[in-house]
Length: 218
Image (cartoon, rainbow, N blue to C red):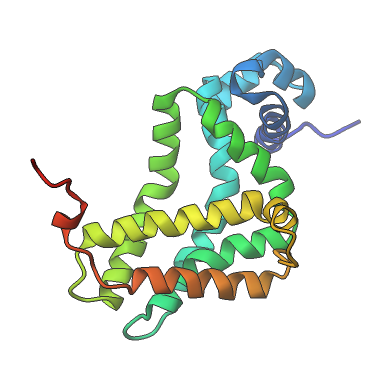
């Protein structure tokens, strides 16, 4: 006689099935009926663990993001004394690149792409819940490494760094072919070094005057 499936096992099966189906079909097209069939559970089990499809989608994202962010904080906290910009950026970048080197992007990349197809309020809530406190902590660490540079300026620079990171992961192999270059974005140590070098140069650049961004009045 088979042992009864524990609640935690049921929850994991639901998350695994939801992850596959959300990645394949997107948020709107994925139905709880399809997810429950794939997980071999009934709708009551989904309602018990997650209540709504929105909460289930959030849980699927959080499950993949949490270990990366935990590793980021662990690395950030390991920086002894005054942090350098390079060390702060390594703590932010390396955990994601390590994940990429382990093959996880085959799961995460399509899943994160589907995030852009969810209702805006859900999208905003997921980003804030999973990345808001983390990004604020990294901006604070950069402020410790760059005393005198306003937090607002560091937020802009962190935004640009995130853009460079995301673009490299999403389009690196394609752009290497388009530019007919030998860029090897699968050399993960080189990728980390280059992202840190590029990001640190931007973070440490002289702060522009706010007035220079305003159009001259006529």
